[in-house]
Image (tube, rainbow, N blue to C red):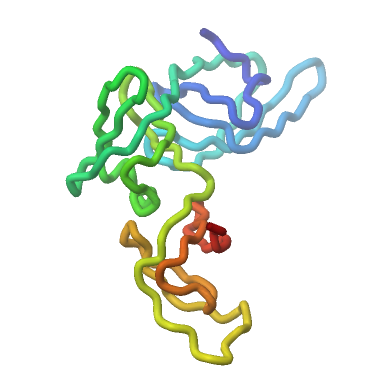
Amino acid sequence: MALSITNLKKGVVFQLDGEPYRVVEYNQKVMGRGGSIVNVRVKSLLDGKVLEKTFKGNEQLETADVSTQNVQYLYSDGSVFHFMNQESFEQFEVSGELMGDGAGYLKEGDMVGLQFFNGVPINVELPKNVPLLVTYTEHAVKGDTSSSITKEATLETGITIRVPAFIKQGDVISVDTSNGAYRERVKE
């Protein structure tokens, strides 16, 4: 199905040179006599690269056949991550390269969105924030109660992040998956 360049609003997914892209920023300039130029920043759904593109006049683009399924993370054997659709029980394998840093925020049993392009998994959509257990951190020095003092903490998935001094081993904290930053201690 053809997609007009004026439909390239933020979040729209389209296909360019056989590769799916999502619009990150959109800016349209209307020229005299009905012509227009559309400048967009697009992010590749295959490799995550961000590109600047300019489209003119009445160019047409193809819509991308990208779908998302809610799946459960089962396990990893080191280089391959295994997921299962809870309704159909169909299982999917995702390479470690595709998972990237997102692997540090996954626990067995977590639900995530798995994006498909032409039936092939291309991206794992993590929740914005995930609760993770602190498995190791140094004890706070008595008197260091300022919230600006941070220390390293190892989480149950094996990643290490900076946390405030009052966080202790056994606490469950919320971590932002977009940048790996501590958000807050989760109340039990």
